[in-house]
Length: 558
Image 1 (cartoon, rainbow, N blue to C red):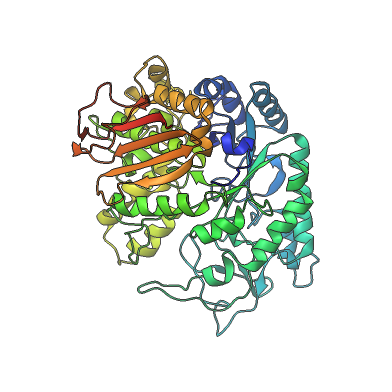
Image 2: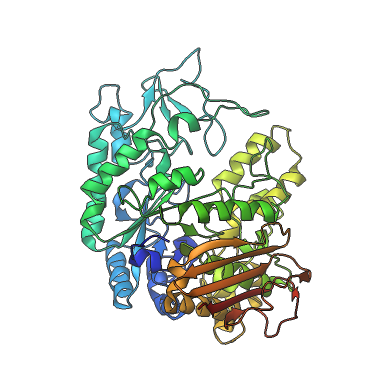
């Protein structure tokens, strides 16, 4: 086991806030900065070390704040810069840190740079974005956007196309232009000087475009993939190394990149040499390993534990000692983890939520808790497309259902399982009107199960999911082995049990998790001596793991 560098961001537990859905302080139905500030004591009591706030910058909201029109202003719905300054001050006063979302692969088409850029071909800001002539009376190449449709939009004023890997209102910035990098780095420095504690970097693996060749077309797909030209390129690594030297090295920050791809990418982005980022999010376990079909992630079947475990274990084994890891299941782009990986029935929701939490806090890496996970919040299960707000859902509906290629009921069933709005419903604070989220009409409906699942009830219930998370976080703070222990996989042939141990000096932490709603034969824990630090069952059965049972035992070797 190699000597390990200690860092606060390795030891932290990060809580992600989706501001629009967290807490509304003024009754307009939209969460805001003052709503977050009002609940900082809740987060402090839970025990988290840092809060990551999804984008709060000025935005026309074509993609819920990920289309930014002014990086140095606050979205009016969320409050003012004075509100932000107070949030930052109050967060720090409680000993917590504040992580900002950094969205710089693209801007809004209402950003001042793009407004200028589209005026003429010789405008000084033209090269701040990626403009190309069309080909054969069509776009410059065959790339499709992440939200369906072409990745190119023709601008009639100048007759050229601009690149947008997401919606047409999100034109991609041209990082090859040094002036763009200067502008981005100056903006990042401005926020660092305000006192923020880090950045979560949105789709950062896409910033370096190296060519504009046609991409491969998957069977049944309408467009080609931009990935070979736009993802994990050498240009991206150069830009991040420049960012490190010009901005990141001057502050004590947590930096986490949103990147896809396997461990080979994580090893480069998050190398212990510190040349780029602290850590990155991997998506293989969330992307539906077994979901390969022409609809991409849109299906109604899950992924077997053996395949999820193989991905997680590979990441654990290959990164340790070389690059730092992140551990998470849910976020604002994923459905609720207990609905997807656990069991959200009344019988098993609490047990499975605790089991999944045990995994997240005992694997090696920085744990990320998405708002409401600590309560076991579930998918909302909408039944009509009109109920969804997410631009991705409506683009997919137009592409596949309105074209007659997929049955409407099938697609609604897929949405109910995997759509992003499942995780974006308002936070369930109490059993009062609108779950205590807002006195007004919420921007997205509150899940009707808030009478059963809410923070006020759970804080006062020692056996709740919330108090289980609180204990897990406290254990991680108490025992270095949770953070720095080496990972060793166990029972890798099991279809039902995820088991592993963590080893640090003479300590051994053994973890066994039953991922099913049935009793499973398992004698792994029977003969272990030591202290059971946490379990989601008060008593155990010899040779058996009960449905969704989680056990964590700390032993000391001679």
